[in-house]
Image 1: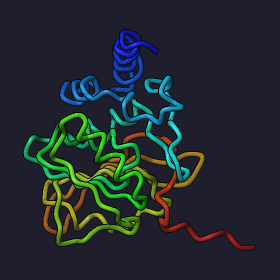
Image 2: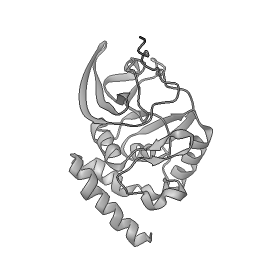
Image 3: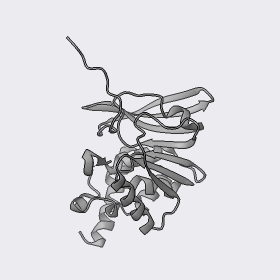
Image 4: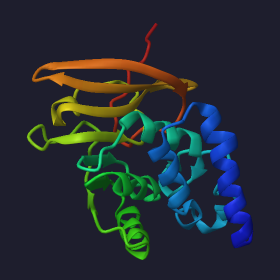
Length: 220
């Protein structure tokens, strides 16, 4: 695919996939247009960079489909002053988008190669307000380290409260909960010191975070 085709494919992605999935926030649309998705897709799938699919990554992980990334960005409503936690670095694309929107991003992943590849990609695009760590956050995060937005990019078969306390008051958590074939995307907002509001957004399905708690198996 040529550079001209990339630009046309990007425009088509935004108009035909993302807008039609109720992503109308202009800041979210602008960042999806500005960050070159094709540079973050594994080389063997580069021609699928703008397709309406979850793109496979190593270790059984995926890069979310463009429309899902768009809904996540719109839902979190990132402000320029926001501090953001991303759980699951993956390709680094979402970290780049979040960093363009917010003040600073901490992105964590179990796999060192995801961390190092993402660092290189963001540096190549002069994005310097994101840092990456190798951490296991499947059960939650340090409750004393607070963020304005948390994006969990793998699903949680069982919703736990391990991220709730890591939100500032007014902070938003995007998380996908449940087991295949249908999962539920949620936004959880901290509305007080010990109060959270929960809103169901849509149904989808993505792989779980490695090490996430599983629901009890039915026994006869």
